[in-house]
Length: 197
Image (tube, rainbow, N blue to C red; front, side, top):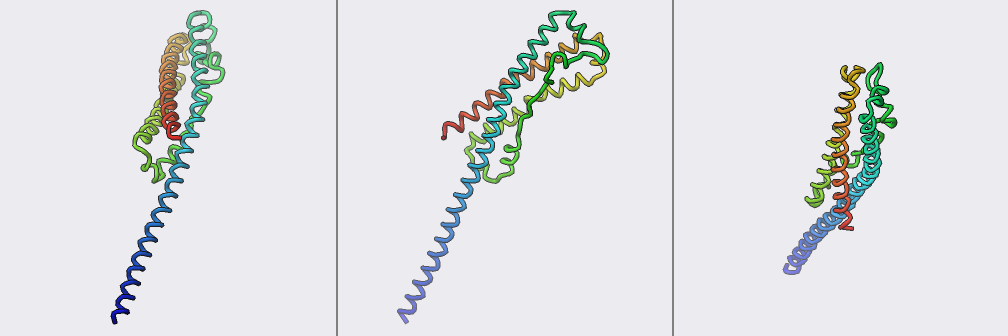
């Protein structure tokens, strides 16, 4: 009887040990899988930020050039008169490439938000990521204001060319300032993740 009790006790301990070992291994492998998923999500966001940063540098240079063109036109009244006619100010004569030629992505960030592992990221890094994408969204609001100016009835008036150009210049200055600030956010985010590698 003593030996059968020992056998049962030993088998019970083996079963408990086996279950605990299986739970531990399952948790361990889940953690590794979760770490890999998080690393993939972070790498996708960083790729997107690097691409956006390159586009932003090009856009900043273009907007600097555009502001210079506007200043040149504003300095010469005959230039303004030559740019206004039927249909209002002919902005395309200054902004030959349009106002914005680059679109800035946020698909990787949006996907990361739906990934449950993002919450495992260090709080500082998550905050910098979130602030960067918030700033990216805010940076291009002046474009909507320019579009409102261009689509208004006042814009179509030939005698409002200078005023309209001044309004557009103000919004472009705002846009340019926000782009410069966004460049700082991109730099901070990329440096923060570079430190770890």
